[in-house]
Structure formats: structure tokens, C-alpha cells
Amino acid sequence: MIIRMVEWLSKASEIRIVIISLAILAVIGAVQVVTLARLTLAPAYLIPIALVTLRSTRTAGLLTSVVCGVMWISMEVRSPTGSEFLWLDAWNNLLRVGVFVSFALILARFKGDMVREMKLNAKLQAALAEVNQLSGLLPICAWCKRIRDDQGTWQQIETYITVHSEADFTHGICPDCARKHKAEHIR
Image 1 (cartoon, one colour):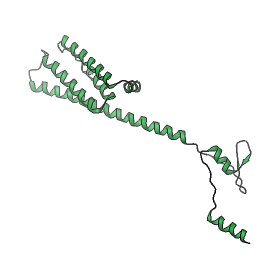
Image 2 (cartoon, helix red, strand yellow; image 1 turned 180 degrees about the vertical axis):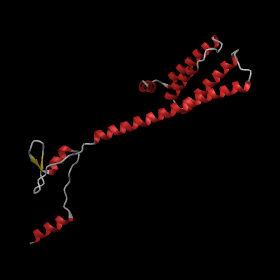
Image 3 (cartoon, helix red, strand yellow; image 1 turned 120 degrees about the vertical axis):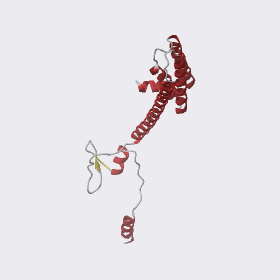
Image 4 (tube, one colour; image 1 turned 180 degrees about the horizontal axis):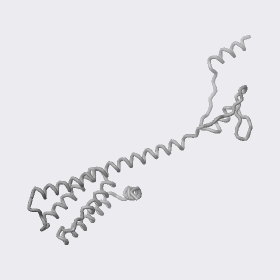
């Protein structure tokens, strides 16, 4: 499901994702205003953070997480159920923003890992498509060096390898053979 969501996010424009995220935040704000912030909507704040972080950059995700934290704090300030200890409210709000920022950082890391994995998989698939290698045992004549194929016919080694791989041959003469055959032609 996460992979499908990431695929959808990669196809949707960043503007569309930001608009959807702002609409979600507006709905969250409206619900909190109506319920006087008595209804905890902490998980709902993670949705716009996830959308923006997975579609856009890490910085945009961090900015969204801070905006969500500030919005939550502003709703908490308006709530009549505040604590008598101001430092306790400040600490709780700071922790909430920290959780949002941490969530954005974790998602950005996850997204980066997924992108790297998809690129590596694409490279691997391309490399596998290019590889056409010989494997196993090849029956070869000890004298003429011809290779017996699956049908039992004997082929020159150059022909067999050219057909069963992407290798091509070019011929030359090694120094030992050059000396040997040069000596034979001089006699």
C-alpha cells in the first residue's frame, strides 16, 4: 500500500499535494474549533506531513511539520482545558512539534532509501538485460577445439560463442604462433 501511495504521490503535482494538505489542515482546525480542542487529532496532523514529505523535499516536509505544530499549539492555547503549569504546556507543545519534525525526517529518509532502491533495481534490471553469458560445461574437442552444441553438432568455437553470447571475435596471431609459423614458412 505504501508503494502505491508513493507511486501516486510521484505522479501528482506538488501544488496539488500542498492544496490537499492545506485542506486537511483546515478540516482538522475546524474540528478542533468546534470541539474546543477536546478531541485529540494528533494522528490527523501526520497526514499532511506525510503527503508533503513524500512528494516534495525534506525541507518542505520539515516546514509542514512546523506549521502543523504551530497550528496544534494555537488550538491548545484556545482550549479552556489548559494546565495550571505553563511550563508543562510549553514542554508538551515542544514535544509535539518534535514528534512532527522527527516524523518528517524519518519519512524523508525512508523516501530517499526507496528512491535509491528503485534506481539500483533499475540498474540491476538493465545489467541483467545486457548479460548473456555462457555457463556450465561445454564439450570441446581436444584436437580441433570445436564445441558440441545441444543438438550434437560440432561448431567452431568462434561460431558457438558468437551465437550464445554477445561476444564477437577478431583474429590475430600470438607471438609464439608467429615465431613458429614464420619458421615453417622460411624452410
